[in-house]
Length: 165
Image 1: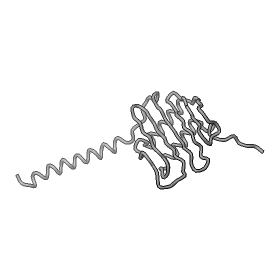
Image 2: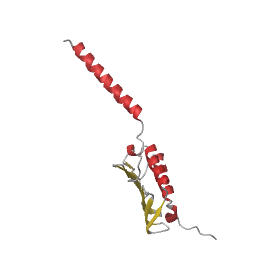
Image 3: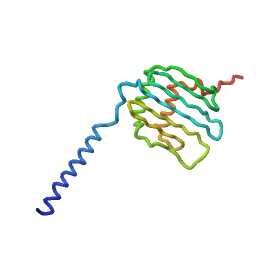
Image 4: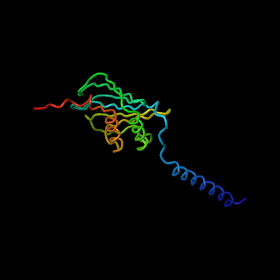
């Protein structure tokens, strides 16, 4: 058997394999969110900076329960809880999947100091992902952090009461 007769089948096999990998990756697209969000758990944790950045954490559960713990530079310190519509949780879970959260880096940071750190996570359907944002996160992640606050309505605990003259 000559060298060419051995190389040709190997090259053909390699080409077919690469084609299948590319084809399946194009067809599969992003992973859709699970149908059930009952076991969903979404967290947001914001830490202090060199200044008065709000320091608090919150958890949103699939049933719409929101738990909050204010630590520093917030209107309400201590533990609080509330309920939001399950559809809001479902939409938020969908947003995690829309931005392909599970494929984001685990940490965004740089050699800078005095900034707050924001950590987000989601646990759902046997999967868990946490992302730490100190500096340089993509816009989708920053928007997700804001959306978690919005859905949880955290401003009721975080924002200082407005002073009226």
